[in-house]
Length: 97
Image (cartoon, rainbow, N blue to C red; front, side, top):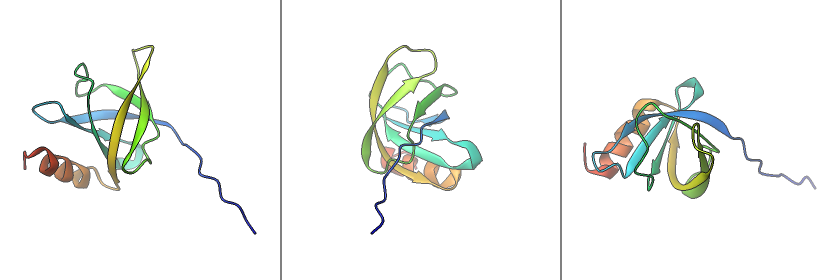
């Protein structure tokens, strides 16, 4: 019987969109995919790079900011194979569609 292990694969992603109230954020991953997460860090801005396991669906993940020395937690809601798909979902959830 084979045992499958889930392995965390962390990667850098760039913030490409934030809701007007800065509660929702979208990051673009290599290859054009994207993830949407709830943001509690008011200091984040579009264009900044974050390091995390962006494959998490509906769960909490520690995120590292490129210029900060400490991690913070975000709730990653979903990942989409296309950036447009994740932007549409994030804008809908933020009430900005």
